[in-house]
Structures are given as C-alpha cells and as structure tokens.
Length: 234
Image (cartoon, rainbow, N blue to C red; front, side):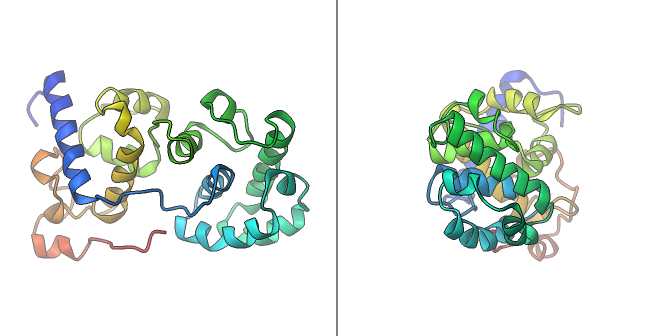
C-alpha cells in the first residue's frame, strides 16, 4: 500500500471497523460466565487453550467453588483434576486459588473494578483485566490477544514488533474509546473465522479492498470460502 498519512490510517481503520460491525453484528465474548468472578477465572483458564474447552470445564468448577471464598480454600489436587483438560492445569490451579485468596483478603470478596488492582492478582495481566473490565463492568478496553496482534499487523495499523501494551496504546488512538470492547470481539471473531493464522481466506474477506495483506491467503472466492470457519468457538 502506498505511503499513508496519519489521517488516512485513522479513516481506513474506522471504515474497517464499520465493515467488521456489519459482518459480525452479534460479536461478543465467547466465554460463558454469570458474573465478574466467573469471567475472571474463565479468562485465566483460557490461556493456551480454546474457549470451547474452558466452557466445557467451568460448569463443574463453579458448581463446586461458586465464590472467591469457596475457591480460596479449594483443595489443589481436587481443582487440578477439574482443570486438567485445559492444559497447564497446575499453574492455572495456583493462579485461580491465588487470585481468589487475594480477592477475599484484599478486596472484600469482590472482583476489583480498576486495572491497577486487577493486574496485582495472580495470573492476571492487562489482557485478562481488559476482558473483565469491558465485559463485566462496561469499562472500555482492548483485548490484545494473539488474534488481535496478528490482524492489526496484517491490516497495516502498526509497524514493527511492538509489545502488547504498545499495541493497545496505538490501536486505542485509531478506534473510538466507547467501541474498544466490542471492537476487540469483532477482531477476535474475524481472526477465528476468516483471517486465520496460517491461511487467511482473503478471497472471502469483506475487508479485502482495504487490507494491504490481501493475497496472503487464497484470493479465489471458491477456494477461500472453503477456509472460512463457522465454529463452534464457544
């Protein structure tokens, strides 16, 4: 793509966001949760596994340990047995028990509503905190996961090997703040369904005319259509 002005980039990014909004009008968090605590735990468990696997695992987990107080005193061996299917189950057990203890002891049993507090919890970084803030508390946030990073690079919205915090800052200047949370869902949905990591379905992509990476995957519509995924992702 020819040299693009800053204004041109902002306009292109916002047009792409509008197209994604039309393409995925129902985009939402694909983790199942009933409250902020469940979402926090589910997001921690989603590392290095799929939302599908987490959603299959959490019903038994929350039935046995419904509150931070319950989870704080959980038997690690029992919890490991429940979490084993999600992978890295020992580390995840330490994290969810640890964050439950912290919520019980430092935050009165309530999931904190501030980024600065959330990231002090075991196993919780900015990505997880933004998921909770945006989807449980309505505080706008960008979820810079692997799909997000891959797509904004393919879109030509960022340059170089930026870390997730810098990417969050850069994209936050392109997309209106009140759309950060739903925009994150749109990007993640697009990354799971069309702009796939190894072979994006370029010929079936509604963003093709605006994407400098068009041609990374098959451009023939029939070939590309076969690459489009429909889920389930939740």
